[in-house]
Length: 405
Image 1 (tube, rainbow, N blue to C red):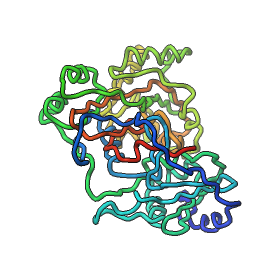
Image 2 (spheres, helix red, strand yellow):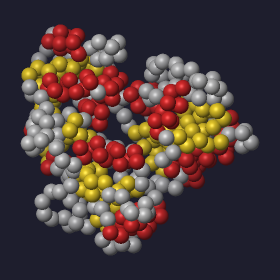
Image 3 (tube, one colour):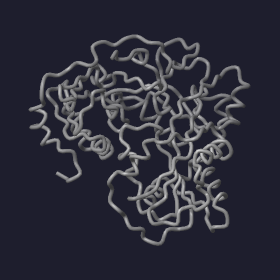
Image 4 (cartoon, rainbow, N blue to C red):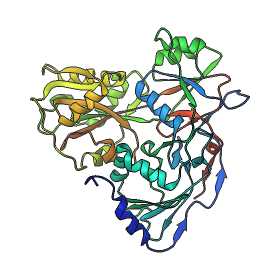
């Protein structure tokens, strides 16, 4: 077994000796107002949602939300809803949580998989992203008790359901057909999509929102503040000098107001990035001296805007901006071979060490801004559910109910 892998085998022994009886913490599910559901005048049977996006990362999150189901869901208000698990409980030590798989784990149709506790544990063990999410959240064991029950052991007690169970990395497919169909405008201009296209357009472009606001057949809804942009400065580098003033509160406010075109506000501090910077990670040596550039993801307009503003603030220091494809950006970030990096991450996360796995060891991290996007929804679209990270998917019956405390 690789040294970084979760000790599933050892967990078989440990969980079997979990202390005390299980304490139920989800006795009932109660109806509540659907504050995280977008409705139009839709009637008729449920159907797949057609959607267009102005950012590839947002499209990926929407695909995962539509096609994969984690043990629990987390809505835009932060409430935990049943997902693969219909009930959960902890033992008296609060270190061992039992997930009871519900109807959602059964096959939705003839071609969809049926998820047993053993199949779920095996899938997590084989998936590097799932293994990282669990390990970074302090999970020490994952043990199937029978087909419908899975015991997860943590290094530290959790009186409330650990939010890692809502992590997208733990999601698995429960359908054999897509519930989200991506539509691309023929010209590449999303105004075409507003004119004649999909049920949903997710965007941060204020010009597109203004254009949609003049159309009677669509409406727009602000999504949660879901992304945080961070400046990562590798250890031992030159930093950015005067570009980062002592008064970072005023600095962040100015970036949100003047540098970013989409909805932005100063990043909250302290945040998960503070603890993420202290996570243990291997130090990777750069292959060459760090380049005098601020690197960012090539398909991220907000990342480019922030990098350009930081270069301007740095003054005559010979800095430039460098767009990189996402894989190249992560590789460069691990090596720390640029003077600075502008990266984005979720505004909230259950696993700071998983989110920061690509950061160079010893880096200084400066939160910059938080952003949100908007959903442009066409009249007649089916009801849509908004999740905690701004992903929008087809709404289901469980989206108007939550577990009572």
